[in-house]
Every structure is written in structure tokens, then in C-alpha cells.
Amino acid sequence: MRAPVAIAERGRPLGSPVSVWLTFRLIPFLGAGLIKLWSYTLRVRREGFEAVEDLAARDARFILAFWHRRLFMMPLAYPFRRRGSAGEARGVAILSSDSRDGERSAATWRWFGIHAVRGTASDDGARALVRMIQAVKQGWDFGITPDGPRGPLLQLKPGTIALARKTGAWIVPVSLAFDRSFELKTWDRMVIPFPFATCVIRYGTPYQLPPSAADTAEAEQLQRRMDELEQWAEAFNHG
Image 1: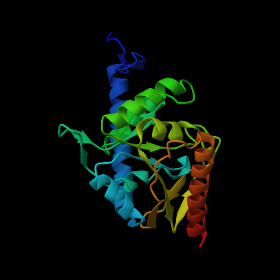
Image 2: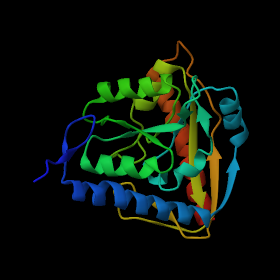
Image 3: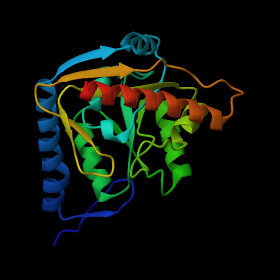
Image 4: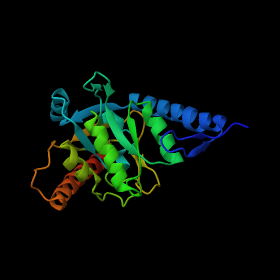
């Protein structure tokens, strides 16, 4: 009998080769394909995108901060194809938990060119932060759900501010809204658009943390900016 396949970085068993192929290869492939097909039916427009394009043109690193309930179509908010200093492919990275669910999630987002940094902020925040910092310094932008992975819903955790402070990356609050959508009965009330809906992606003004600013004050400011975007998204959906 073959030995179980393990997560490469952790050595944590995932199951037999057949189980791994089904759960962590085939299902992510099908899931990513479904999301991509779904996204192709949407009518997408962007607001406030010029400032983010300018950051990419200047080869500046930035952090996209969005609430977990807006995650489903968030890859649409990052249409860039970037390169590192040696010409290697770079793009956006996310934090993905060191678990079977995290492995499946990472395998799914990989089909979108999204790099998964392994770790769980709630279980080992310091180690996860170090890996996030390393990714940004290696040329990756970062996508963060400050209320993830398990909430509390719409409440900012300190990771975004800490990452911006340690790397100098720009913070870009972002949200997306649909004219027709429904909510899942999950802890985050995940928002899912109906096919052929209009999707509007709104970017907040990019900014960097002032060197002398207190993290508490900066966290309160980011919370306000993200709350404003969430209020806009809700109003758009019910308008």
C-alpha cells in the first residue's frame, strides 16, 4: 500500500494518491473552471482603478484589503500580470491555512495565478506574518481579508496594518458589488452574483502608513474606509 501524500511544506498527510488527485487536483480544477465561466458572464466595470494601475506601472507593491464576504469574485479585482526583478512571474498572494481545506483552497486559486502563502494568522500569527512579509519583499502583491478566516464578520484584525508597516506596501481597500446576487448561509454571509449580473469593482484611494502613525489609529482608519465600501456595496445591491 502506498504511503499517504503530504503537504509539501508541512509533511501533514492528505491521503492516498487517488484521494489526493480527486480532492486536491480534480475538484480544484473543476471549481476554478466553474468560477471562471461564471465570471465570464458578468458585465464588469471598475471605479478608482487608475490609481492602482499607476502603482503597478511604477512597480510598487500593494495590499488589496477586502471583507471575506466579497471573496468569491475578487480575482476580478486583480487583472495584472507582473514580473519579479529577474523576470519571474509575479502577481497576487494570499494567506491559506495549513490544513486540508487550506490545501484545497490553495489548489483552486492557483488556477487564477494566485500564490498561496501557507499559515494561519489566528493560530500562529507571527509565523504567518513573516511569510507574508517575505512574499511581498519577493515581489508579490497581497490580498487580505482582515476579518478572515473565521471572523468576527467585518471586524479588522491587525495583520493588514502589520504587513503594510513592515514592507512599506500601499494599502488599497477594495470591494465589489452586484446588481443581482444572493447570500450564502455561512459565517461571512458570502455574496454570490447571479450569472449575467453587473459587477462593479470599487477601489479606495491607495495610501501608505505614515512612519510615526500609531497602529491603532491606522487600524481605525482602515476599518472606516472598508466600512464605507461595504455600505456602498450593500446600497448598490439593494438600489
